Image (cartoon, rainbow, N blue to C red):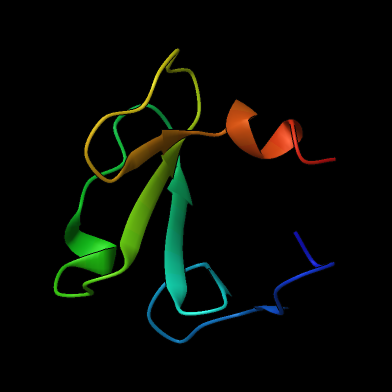
Length: 64
């Protein structure tokens, strides 16, 4: 992802890629951390598929 976007740390979320903020956690990670962010996403471990603004952690491994 770093080829096209800058990856940075964030004061609100765990990381940020361009304008998108990502909160990273386990299967039960909630929306609290990215609460009011319009381009906020939750990245969860131990889930098979994503929905709404929740992405499986393994999606990011596909970009490696």
